[in-house]
Image (tube, rainbow, N blue to C red; front, top):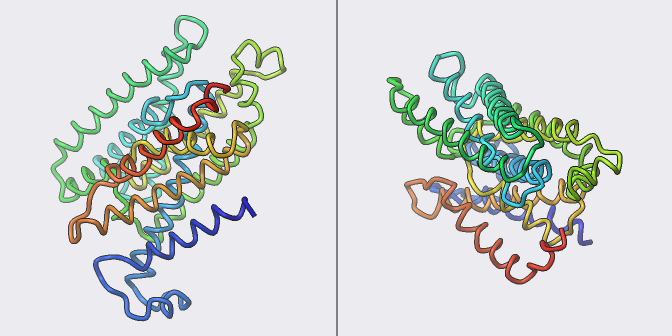
Length: 323
């Protein structure tokens, strides 16, 4: 029964999200059981709701991979430079005219940028010897700042009609998502999720420290490499489709960990559920709370996720101490 609660909750919230918006839908339940019968519901709201679920799930698992690979509680795609690298890759592809906003080509560029930035972070952090989680975070923040600056400069000098859309998209928005955009993000999320699921048991051992994991038979470098691939696919696909949505990669794994325990295999699923729920609720609020204007989704994700995370840490802080 407990395992079905997140699924039922997501379905109920998804239906609620499809029912609200700037336009009132007469006979919503009739429209809901007849796919394609209403353009607003099925061509605008449905892909947006689906994108919120998929992106939230991808960022939740990506955050788990970042924390597991670095063995650091504050690691996430934004801190390791992954998100900024994905944004940079997609923006460069769009700026050069090679790809269009939200296209499969932009997704490929974003994923490549995410992999590049994350690789740079890991290589620089290990430049002088053994990889330190503290050094990894510091280097990641610096790499993220560099790529974020490059995104800002590129967007500022871009003299194209879609420059404003690119700027808004780089701050995080699901407004440009269509049904066609869902194909690419589904592929990257599935592949990245499968990789994460396969290495999850080894991340449990890695949480004991590199030396302990090595003595337990774990190839630490190999596990981190696959975690890097999973992280880049998940975060790269998400960011290149809807832009940078902060806080989900940090909050979702922690919330899931406090509720469901430390096992990375279970957390792979539960982080996906928590991330999907937060992004869906946040996006619904961002497009309805200030109609007809739309707020950046990052404001809503922080507003929803931060109090939950604070409450869980305050009430169940002993759980994190045991990890």
